[in-house]
Length: 235
Image (cartoon, rainbow, N blue to C red; front, side, top):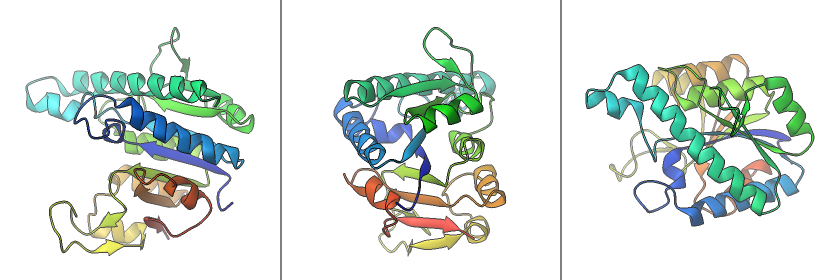
C-alpha cells in the first residue's frame, strides 16, 4: 500500500448521486462499500463530510440569512450525512464512529483528536462532522485540519470530477487536466481545488492531496495503492 492512514473528504454533492438534492442511499452504499474495501487492505480511514446536498451557508446568506447562522445550519447538515454513512457502514459490517465539532452527545461523540487516532489504530472508520465547529471555515479546511491532527499520510478529496483542471471541465470542453501540480501552482493559478486555508495547511505540513472521482467504483482502492488516478497535489 502507498498510504497507511488517509483522510477522505467527501462533498455532500457526491452523496446525492443523480438525485439533485438530499441523499441517494444507493450512492451512499456504493461509497461505503469502497471504504470497507480499502479498510480490508489494512488502511486506516478518517472521513470529513460536507453538507451541500442539504444546505449551504453561503446560499442562505444570499437569501438574507445571517452568515453565521447559515454556517451553523450547514454544520448540522453534515451531521445528517455522517449518521447516514455511519449506519450504512455498520450494516455492511464496518465499524464506524461519528465525532462532531459541535456538542451533540446524544447522537455522536465530541471531537477528540487523541481518541480519534486510537479508533483509527483499532481499525474503526472515524467520521468527522460539523466542520471545524466555527463559521466562515469550509469543510475543506476542516479536512486539512483533521488530516494534520490525525497524522494522515494523505488527504483524498473524492468528488464527481476526475481531477484538477485549469477551468471547469463541465463548462469548458478545452479545459486542461493536471495529473500532478504543486501547492504553489494551485495558489498562483487560483485553481478551485480547495480553499486557500486548506491548501496552506497541507503545504505547511507536507500532506499531499489526491483529487479524483469517487463515482468510478475502484478509484479509492487504486489511489490507496499508489496508482496514477486523478490529480496529486504536492511540493
